[in-house]
Length: 281
Image (cartoon, helix red, strand yellow):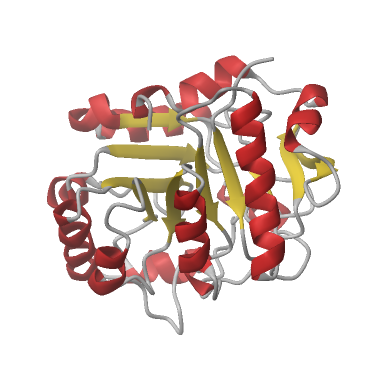
């Protein structure tokens, strides 16, 4: 069995943003700290059984900084020898909190879909019509670099931002990695965003516009996340994007991840491409 070493734990449904094409929407309430630790123990057991020494848990959401036990879970994952990362919209992130994660977090991913307030409002990437500014992003990136944490920038490309150029942002923030996602639809999750779809050609042209950063860009067209993004939702269910739907293959509260993955149609080639430029991290 292929040893998949990155597990995305969507710890909460809560989010201060309301992005129209968000795929990170799941059923269920936030787990208690004990329930979340049980899930992490299950993941740790899977890593041990497969002799995966570079296993990583990526905390996601919703917005993971809204989960009240996040810092405790980061500490707990570290105590089990698991590399830990986080993907956030950055709005609630502070330099002080970043410094508290020094030596505990390997990667902080910040989602940035526009530098235009108008576009962010249309996307829903805002809180009370306020979105994170370039000045704020620079402050956060400086703190991330000072703490020797890798910075990743995620951008979903759609009709709402396809004419933008992010080169100034990338030069200012100096990320180690950039992920560009072609907006994709998940049945029952973000169908209402169909009008914002772009073609593969349009997505390729957007990527080409940023070819100055080609060495650190991972481009993910539609379909790249199918059967390659290992995802646990707030209720502990293991799910995959399978043919444009979220399909559940088991629950880590009652089944071992090791056993669940024996019967999951994972695509190791897609997985390797997704994490190719991360190296061991």
